[in-house]
Image 1 (cartoon, chains in turn yellow, purple):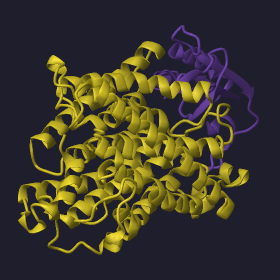
Image 2: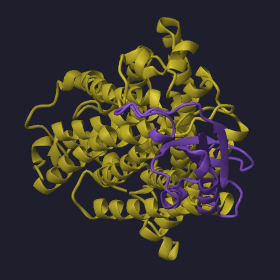
Image 3: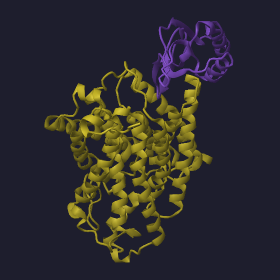
Image 4: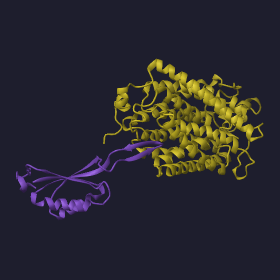
Length: 434
Length: 112
């Protein structure tokens, strides 16, 4: 298992043994990570924005686009100010188990010539910034169509610093989960579980949209959703293959397994609807694709192509049932199904990485256990620890943040405003004038 | 004069228009409408959320006809719009008091 965790180690050992000056800029790696950074930003704007925007009712389409866009801007500045240093600290400083050192507030320890492994430190910082952008943007789906814009900004800002940055440190920044040997190549725990648990907690605390379960709330424009889904798929190559932080064989394998899992997940979800409902739906096939992508994300540096197909198929079926269960049985209005797709997928993928990383599974073999671990059982324990820790910490912290924000500005628009739609009430605009 | 209103399946509009033209009906007004009768609505499914859509899309045609043309017009619509399946639609006929051609000021059957 290479990637971010190894990079964190490199940063630690860097000055101690080999010394930072021995590092040389690798131009191939730099070129690829520059490209991957653009791809990951492309996932949020416009990919996720369009994907989500099409799923809401016509009166709320702008509110979704606005939330994603404003989050892109705000999270970037916060990552620059304190997020990055909490997650990754600074070069040559021994990192604590829970948060990074504060040497990189406002990127203080990064210059144009600083290196991080074989790539410029500036590049690593902005590559990671694009992950810090999409994670809060994913949460938007949980409270869509009813949250006040000011509350959303305040919540997301605190959440980035209190939840995302520390969890990122635990796994990728030299913290306790990474040191334990947790295999999370591109963010099953760091991105998908944190975002999805936050979305679920927000949906439960804020309550369902008015009329949920009684009034029809079909997506207003599935054409936008399918276009956004396609952009997400392409952008995900940067997300997963970019997480190799190198232009090497591990990046290429990550891209291959990512693509196979997306394909398998899409077909699996389509087949489930075809069998159970009688018709294959467009929304179904693209949702299965996202499930396949979210699920392979943590495993994309650990598994081989045959395992990726198994992971994708499992994701399509399990996330399909999870979506039905949460919506129709638990009656939780996670408006755009963030938890059943990203959360269930993230958990599933993090656990399956622990199985399919084994080199003893014939055609389903992967790239091996983490150092010091010699069995599937041992690796699974570490993976499960990562899942439980991330899930629990995110749930508790998100609950507290939402309580505080509710006291400060109020989380939800009032009933009349919600009926009118957030576009007119919060932004004085309409999405379409047809 | 009579005002004839026909509610038909949308894909039958061209057939009905041609049939009416052949019996000498020179003009009509068409609207896309929604409604239901014996043919109930359909369900839509979005990620497990099932919605019953009660209203079916239909096309509403309005034609003003002279008393002499009425039977031929009804016959033409009935033949052209029929599929034999539930949901073929309905025809309503009501008395029409007056008609005026705006350009010339002609009234009554001369205005049709």
